[in-house]
Image (cartoon, rainbow, N blue to C red; front, side):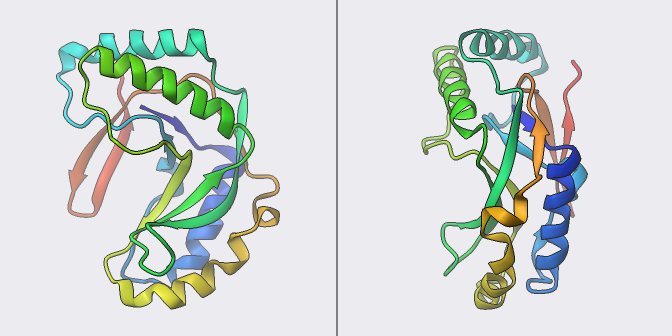
Length: 181
């Protein structure tokens, strides 16, 4: 379940990825057209439960609507820049509203018996995944221009309701597509 990136936010994320790719050529960098802010990762879900997921998302939206827009701001790494495994762009504008909606969605999903990740929600967009930690210093230096809010000044995207996505593992990494069922 996620909010897709589009427009200026996807373009800015694409520029960041292009700038970081040379610093970590062995990383798996995502296609800007598939970037999204994950609200909940559920793993394998039977098709028969998709309508239930849609209803739970609608109920969460009714209690705490998505912001009309959000904006990317800053760049970071999980767990840290010293040992990066994931490079991400954070959400600035709209983050509080996304957090409120995620909390309501999480509670509804848990009550319905869906497995919930046991970590705090930090609204972000995963730009890439690293395999080789030896590139950390080079990557951190290349990330410098993207860590401040000025690099993301016009990186807004419309949020709208949370959407349901499927994720299929391929040799090149996960392939995400909006679930239509």
